[in-house]
Length: 364
Image (cartoon, rainbow, N blue to C red):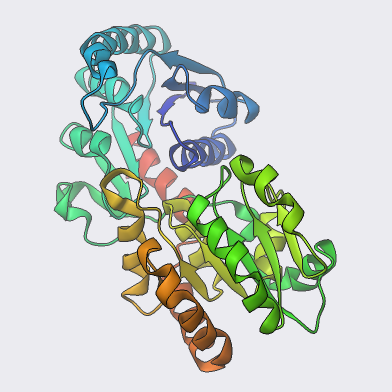
């Protein structure tokens, strides 16, 4: 029998990339299988999923705005439209399993799949569950999570702690240090700071780095600064012999390999990757995300003495002191590295697919 998998997740890379990683692993195990993605018709998954080689259908759906908004008036109409379209998609495609990775497009699809008695699995990337996955949790058979303690949000008997799917090229960065140094043309006599603000960029992080450039120079650091698409024009002239400004980093594996210290936002996938990378990290969570989930992600790591966490409001008063302490203490660096590596889950994608196989009843 030819297997069919339907996968939905989107709105942000944090939902899309896990969905693609799961599909890729399923394709490795079941080369003859058919795959269909379902997303929100005006969101980034409509571009990213075809780039990864998969077909996608878009729903007319968006999330509820948290403030009073004219957009909310259209929400009931969009939901009904998406539920009907999901029903038709499922009837035509006839999947063996439905998989959701979060984002509002997965809500109508998995709801209708559950009503049709199609086995359903959802994957939650964050330490604070999203609205869609919380709503779906009573309807699905299995919930794969990245953090302990998720029974606060989901039925405990459905939970499997797997971790988040991450890019496979970072699994062995320790052997790529030399290659990374050469690729970025770095000086061996200086330690390297890697700054990550996400693909679009992080305004407050960029402001901090610009202000701190003399401080980094004084401490004999060289900087790989990923400023993001929105801030390319603002910061591209800030480069120097010891400061590289990049809009994107196409070789993240080599950037991680070259780095001695990392400053990063605390999106779920970034946190999961940094656990595998195992370098000393300072998390600066974005406060402008749903349920303040980045702060909760970072706290789940920092509470285990596995990373430093500095909130945006505290940057001006504490950043230089905290960073100075870190770069001057090899003992602190070693402890953070060892502790964050303990939290890594390198087999997340395989473990999620094992659970999908169980739903297919291919395993006893």
